[in-house]
Image (tube, rainbow, N blue to C red):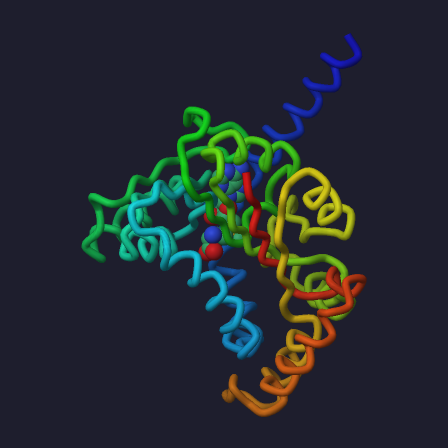
Length: 266
Ligand SMILES: C[S@@+](CC[C@H](N)C(=O)[O-])C[C@H]1O[C@@H](n2cnc3c(N)ncnc32)[C@H](O)[C@@H]1O
């Protein structure tokens, strides 16, 4: 009885979270608001460190020809379309009907509609059979979900030997904490950047290779966005990107980065 009650509470909790997320995206245009804030601190988006992160992702994206790829929380579908252009058969899912409509339109405009399927669906409870996909990708999605339930569901739909690649924000950096505190209007009430405890749970339960970005360059980028606009490849950012690769050799500092790229294997 106790177990049944706990399960019911958990299911209600997830249902509430999913409904709130849907309404924030469909009715409150939260993603557009978040883009506006990010554009104020645009060096955080276009710094050499972010280019390095993107290159690391692209190495995997470019090898996806012929693979069945699932893009979870696909948003406006840009990355699904990119994967389709690299030759993958892509399924993009999102809880927002508005984004699913936009994603379908984008795939038509970009000439890859036959390589993309977009569906409104909750990542916690997907309609796909076990072991359907070779690769699952997601950017800025896991921290909107119940970490454990969603990762186990993603593992279920991944083929044996398949992998999942997520780029997610981290919680611990004090300057980024302040920035988040000052911009609650650009975030959903349930999103929660990954904590040290979350990273430990992932490492304990999955075979995962994690790469970290932005421990030094993110704070520097916030400053240079204000004082050195519009030069996102300024010398301070180049230098901080160089130095932080050494800083990130110290494991205990990893949670203080801005982003983690989680490469999970099944
Ligand atoms: C921060 S946005 C990222 C969107 C996109 N990946 C990008 O990089 O632009 C988070 C996305 O997750 C979607 N989302 C949130 N909860 C979800 C859920 N339970 N199932 C599916 N999608 C969800 C939101 O609708 C939103 O599109």
